[in-house]
Length: 365
Image: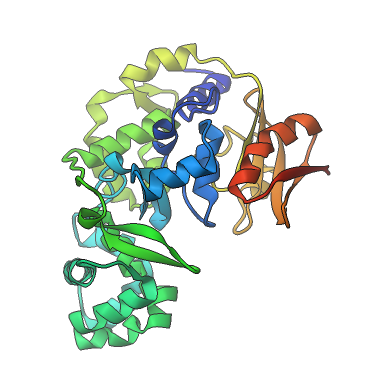
């Protein structure tokens, strides 16, 4: 079956709650990346009619949302009930997949003559013990891990070194679903054990297959290679995960969707209205970037090495780019492209609260 580009975009926008705003849980189902800090909250607000106070209460009081290292090694904000999906769904199962998750630390491991999988077994056990009954910043965790690991790891556990580099080991360990980010202390994340943070620890024995299904529901039609890039895993690991769901898929053009989604995909219609998508938000993590931006000259301006802009969608199509800057109590929104000032201001107004601002100023470029 073949479908038009319009149908693909409309289907994905609907699944991202970007046609009509939905629930907070539905917004969190997209696992928004929280770098720079606060980005995930804006992505949630783009999808749900929620206040900054409501999101903070869901994280700190009700604990229905939890932040953990997940897709692409990034901190993501997810529903607590779906924590296994975005952790154990990525958990390495052999030496090659562990090496893919801790690539930056591989030269040190190779120099020590240690395997990635055996090293991570020790790191996970040491982290479990170090965080028992307490939360620690990354700097504090490095100091706590040093006496719990072989002596040759000690230089890499020094607070500055661990905080800026060696915490890649903690990011990999978080894929067990046992460790998450409780809060921030200054500019550093505070880490804790999930079994001591959440009232009930969620379990999902089908997490790898579940993550493929979630990906296809959000980004289908797609391929296993694009799934690998989105998830931040090796193509071999992705292929094994993909195979778990292959019997549930239908081929559409050059990609696949879940067979149960075919009817919705065929009937998808482009939404009306404007949306401001913040930088690094989940919809912008689609890997076939030509679908959103057919003009190849535009793609490097949207997806930069650093400092990505946000995107303005008008009736489901790209209408411009936008950037935000906090100036005192004012959120200044600078637009690149044709856009209605009042419509942009109305869409940006909820973001002001999340940035600690009381008003919005729109500058049309």
